[in-house]
Length: 506
Image (cartoon, rainbow, N blue to C red):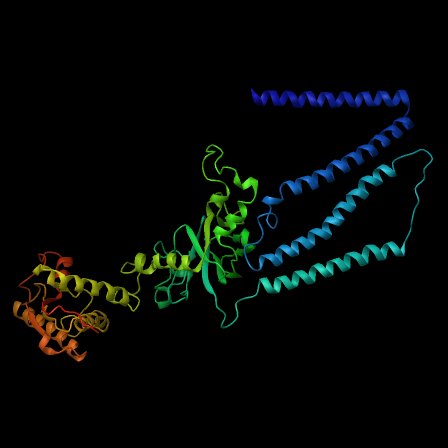
């Protein structure tokens, strides 16, 4: 029904226009062509002046009305150190182009009125005027030179890379349909290498996990954090199509191009909280964020910086929006401590892990040392005899041998630390095997492995009188030896706290 009404309206308008045309023709025939031309010229000139006033007035009024929602004006001043330079450059450009815009429109519509058709008026033909040529050549040349020089200076400063020895942090943004993967360096403050050929479902950005710098890199959730006042270098890449890394409030905008890494350096100058406080000074930002909930939070309270994609990269383009929090260094440090290594939580020990054959990596050593110390402390304080026996989970021997592997030292060094922490503590080391092979051979191997552990401890300064080594072969399985997994659990080395759990006063 609505479509039919619209169609009928278009037909009616068409009929009205046709009738107006016929009336005009009849009027011309009655009044004469010359008189109609004179009247039409007069009205066209007057209407041009009216349009000029309405148009320029609308431009000025609308610019003033909406200035507080435009970047660079009202509360939306740049939130980065380089942003003020770009805003100033845009303002300078606006001044010159604004003068030309207003001047040309005044001339256009004023001339349409002033030089309208009048009987007896003749046009003056100017073949050439050197003065005019100089004016409209020299003035644009000077203005363009000024704008280009200012723009070049801004470009050289804004697009400059970090200098050697400069204090900064680096993150990496990988665009894909339809998401941003933001990678942060771990405590080593170094991003690991990548190779697109390594990209899999479990390794979405192709990190090379043979590079130890990748082991502590982090890929946080939807909310991103950066510290205020800290220079940030962003590596920008894309996996599939062209994207654009866009932080509007920081005047950061750079294409993410497949196969062509780009970068941008900026320094946030306002925290999210400071920007919100700026917004709350404006009436329009004190309106309810949700019009359906007038008692709910205000617009300024719900404001967040955002990372967007400024390319039309597909139907799901809108979903690439990410929230960015700019916080104090203390708040950033607290957030940073809660983040986990992507490698350790998502890759370690799985099919994509190139380090599956290594029992302990250097990055895991401090984590496991802390957990080991806590388990020993709990065992020492416990009154339950069962709690006094702990398994050395991260030591290994060469197949069919009592020779410790190189990465077993991390776990054994944790045991050395525990024995030094409790100088009066003595322990019994027990070796166990599965039931594969001859029982006598298994018994002998378990004894040798228990002694190998004890020997390592003595080489690290632990008195042999505090150690007792025993082997039990396959006589004390932890679980039935009915599957390969269970047999692996029975091939274990344990130690039992015998007594003397007093800490070292030093």
